[in-house]
Image 1 (tube, rainbow over the protein chains, first blue to last red):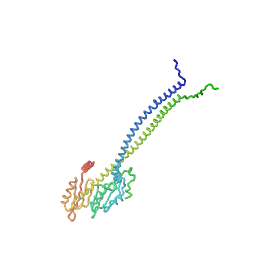
Image 2: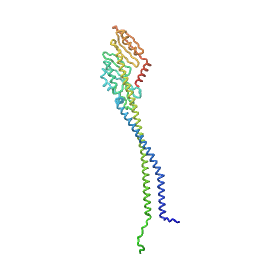
Image 3: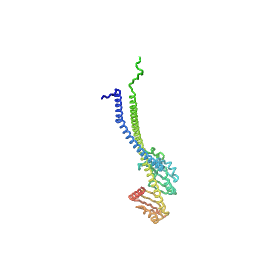
Image 4: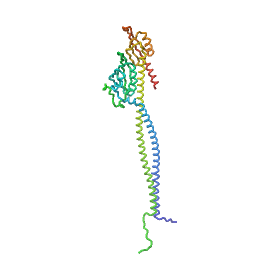
Amino acid sequence: MKINISRQSIYLLTLSLVLLIFVLLFAFLVLIPEGKNYREKRVIVKKERSELRKYQLYNNETEESLQELQSKNRHIITAFDTDFNPSRFKKQYSKYFSDLSLTEGVNLSDEKSFVVYEVNTTSKIDSPKSFYDFLDALNKSDWIISVNFPINFTRENSLIKASFNMKVYSNPSESNSSTPVVEEAL
Amino acid sequence: MQYSYTTPRRKSPITPELQLLFIFFGITIFMLLATYAFLLFKDYQFTQNTLEIEQERYDLNISLHEMDDAIVFIQKQSQLSESVYTKNTVLKDSIANMFDLVPSEITLSEASLLENGLVLKGITPNKDVYNFMLQAPLRSIFHRSYSSFYPLSNGWLRFVSTNYIDKEELDTVEEEVDEDEN
């Protein structure tokens, strides 16, 4: 039995086979691995995005707590940033004293990573009440100031001479770029 | 001279079957290539996204680190200021207590508040007033009290009272105060 296939049909069949093989090879060797890679990457990116979102949320929460802390402690933060100014100090607190003078202080070694400046103070008060009021007012001052021992009270006629040391705390130089201008002001 | 009534069919190498084949495979290959291009584009996009996410995480990490540092620093500032304010208030109370301690019969001329002690100088009408009204409360507060008297021309006595709290006791009290604050 002789199968009679025309030459044109053979060409057509061969071409069809070649193209089919190309399609299959392309699909299995290139497209399917690339598709697999795409799916894997999509999952990874999705996971990374969700992690980033969590991170952003945490970042926002931290930012909120920082802002809350800043607004709560605004006075303290400003006080630590403010350079001690003796003339302004005298102007603000002279109402508690009959006479107030500050003598040149020294920069003490850093205390709890803050810069500490010591000022010797001599003053005259008409009653201890003025000194109590001064100590109360000091806690609301523009600087962070502590009054330290020794404190001397000496009677001078109708007045009391009070001499004491004050420690002014401020931020270290990295966070407080301007250095205290106390010596110049004195 | 014409031998046939039918017009000759124009022969072409691209037969209708071949055209059909080309159209079919053309569409198939186009779709495959389009899918491949889409996948390549997506791959590029994912790589870019990953890089962006990494950069964002890095930026967030820096910002978080800075914020954490700022929070710690503010807390430190707050703690220090609180301790300063407490110290000033305690000092005010100590001075007030000291002045309240002195009876009206005794006149102070000088008072020195030290880290661990108190030195009082003044005049008293007699030793009994001093001993009962000033020395007794001072003894209850301080561990060591020393007094010396100098007679004055008007019959009164000038006194110097030196009182100390032992350092070990002072440290214990400070530790207790710190624990209470914490």
